[in-house]
Amino acid sequence: MESGWDNTVRFDFPYRIADCYAVDCCGFMVDFYKAMAYIAERTGRDKEIAGFEKKRAALEENIRRILYNAEKGFFCDYDFRLHRHTNRVSPASFLPLFCGAASKEQAEAMKALAESETWFYPGIPTISYNHPRYRSEKFWRGPCWLNTAYFTVRGLWNYGYRSLADSLTENLLNWCAQNEDSIYEYYDSKTGKGLGARDFGWSSVFILELLLLKYEENQF
Image (cartoon, rainbow, N blue to C red; front, side, top):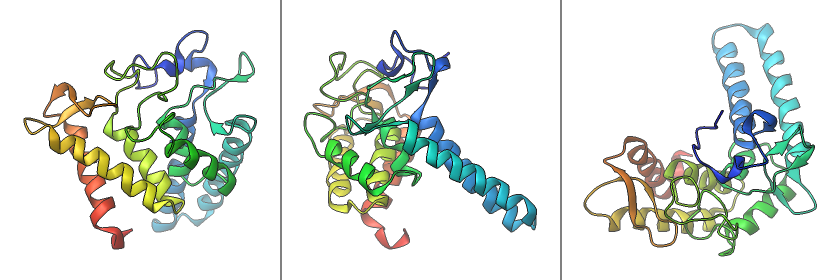
């Protein structure tokens, strides 16, 4: 059992993804329900729209209520076997902003982490800089992956934190540009050095998305 984040710190012992409400997966399901409601509307299945909207609203409420640690001020995965938050903060923690489920107060708390050099600024590592298991070059244990970084940046953008989103975007694009030999699978979250496979497809996709976010503001 793994999350698509391979050897992520998020599900190191004692936490297992099979026993957790994963904050990113829940965020993606919010967007799934939105998409299904849209498809139902466009295809004339009006009776199905309310059902998808009801599921979306219920899931958004659960994200705000269960996956947000109000005492510490961040979203994270929740272990329903151990009945506690994992308190491992990653770009997945920004998915409630990406999908629009976070309250304004919760988004403000996440923004504070995004602009903190102790947590995520400027490289949006796959586990926060201050986590004891953070490693800047080690696969999903600290480098920057452009797909998860994009969800973070776009979430901040969606909630109106445009200046911070732009600053993070510019840093990511500059890292990609400094690696003139290739577009890499992931990047050292301290130096921007390209790591892993070369000519990596989804990195290319998210470079385009970041460029659109930075230079084609009007389309959003």
